[in-house]
Length: 250
Image (cartoon, rainbow, N blue to C red; front, side, top):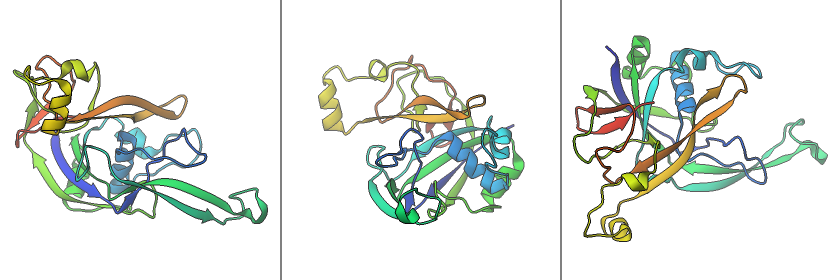
C-alpha cells in the first residue's frame, strides 16, 4: 500500500522562474509546481539533476509518476507577497556590454511556505523525509534561497466521493468552470458571498511536467478556493485524510 505523508517547506525568499519572461524583469510563479517538487525529492534522494540540453534529468525520469498535492501556508488568499531585487552579474560572459556586467531584475517571493502531500511507495524517500535527511541541500529556485522541511505527518486516507457539497484544501486542477460548481447560498448574491464571508478563489496556470519531445513545461490550470463546491462538481484523484481534509494529488 502506498504511504500518504505531508511535510511543510518554507524559505525567506523564493524564485520560481517563468520560462516565458526575460525582459525587463524575470517573473516568478506564485505557487510551487510539480516539476519543482520532483526536483526537491530528487535532491533528498541524491539523484542527478540537469546535465545537458534536451536530456531530462535522472530525478525526473525516476519520479515523474509520483503523485503530489500542494497547499500554500501563511498566505493572503493564495497570493504571497513579492518584491523586486536587482543585482549585477559580473562574470565576463554574462553580457556583451562594455565591462561584461549584466544588471538582472527579478521578482522574488517573500517568505513563501507550502505543505506538500506525497503519495508514494518509495520507502527510501519516505524514510529520508521522516528522518529529515537529504543528500543535497534543497533550495527554492536559487541556491541563495535554501530551504528545509518540518512537520512531517503520515496520514490514513481513502478515496473521496462527494455525497454533499465539499471543500478542497489543496490546489486542484480545474476541469470545468469553478463559478458554476460553487455551492451558493440562495439568499446571498456572488459579491455578498465574497466580501461578507471572506471567501476567495485563486487561479494560476502551473507546470505539471515536461513535454519529453519539446523539453518544455506542460501546463494545467489550477484553483485554490475556500468556497464549497457542489457534490457533482468534477475533480479527479480526491482523497480524504484522517483530519477530514480533502486534497487532490496529481
